[in-house]
Length: 331
Image 1: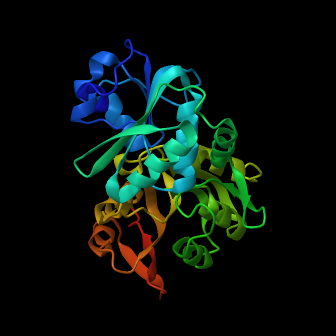
Image 2 (image 1 turned 120 degrees about the vertical axis):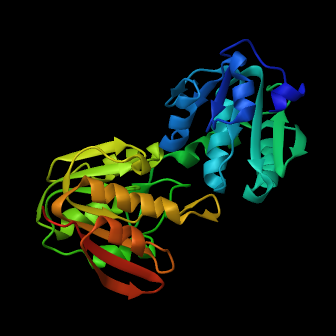
């Protein structure tokens, strides 16, 4: 970490805010400084907690040092940089880091536009940039503009609200649209949406399946789950919203489950994520329960489906995607 290099001084314990914090050897080595860690992605938050760090939701205080790991999506990253500057004390320092292949140079340029000249350290295919002690160099007009970039905004002619940086944040992704088009209208009882995002699939289930009596949404990204609550505020059946890592299993039992599972983290394909979603669905369904899944055609999910379900049939195979219905063997 840059503070441990001597380039940036640590404040007294508890005086550093770390936005989008992730655990690892560097952070573990700095635990004596007790950084305040904020992380909205449940698997990363859980990892921080396992390593003994106190993890919180959004912190509203001001700190002499604000650190952040910048996301790749530019509007989201600009909003996070602006928040870091807004929560840094006068005379404090903002320190941002990103991988070179994830837009590190753009992050550096944006931080300089916002807060004035920055210093830079590059190492291990990453780039860290930090400000001079914050003062008059901060562009206050730009700060206000960029802070607003993370606010929920209407999309799709006002049908939903979303925000930059979420999966398919400003559109209905093609895979989810294909699954919605092939939802059996006789889905009934209590259901779940695993990896619910900002709520599109759950909305389609309620619109197309009149026999549904309740729906639970499980989503690992807190920023998305907040929007799902807003987008489904008018639901006509009981709803439950869970900030949850689906890979770890889910509480409850369900008559049906729908999912468009994630299959990558960063830029690397991780088909085991989708396979874990399938295993979680199999464990959470009642005997005779149904899983409706959409995935890229090339992803190797067939063995996972065969392990967890007695009947598997393909409902669609088009435009590079497959829609599968799997039924759990009745007791």
